[in-house]
Image (tube, rainbow, N blue to C red; front, top):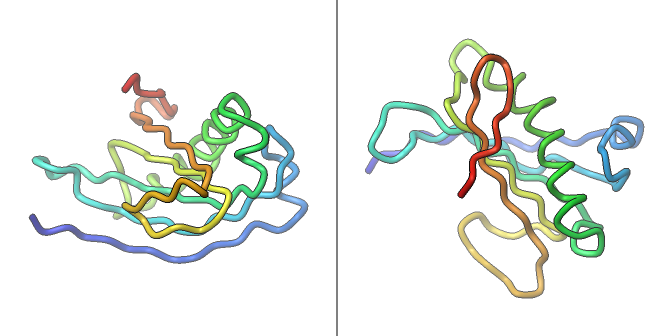
Length: 124
């Protein structure tokens, strides 16, 4: 299967990080658009470093992932050639290569459908 991926690094300033619901520092690390398997639709993947995510737990991570989708996912999928049907948000306390796991790295994932200008959390 051919996959189109566009990735880049984008950092948040300390002032912007305060807007994250948990209040933890957050740095957007990787943003990629990919073709969803079996369709022509795009999936937007947003990966962020959140050094306190493991200590804060899932509820705080979920609030931060919701915020990332609403602020960054909706904006990026609104780009002329970046329209995505789905957004995947990944928070991790330490950078880790995509598609790998490491028991020493705390990380959470959420998948959202984009509809009517909103992020709708998918029940996986």
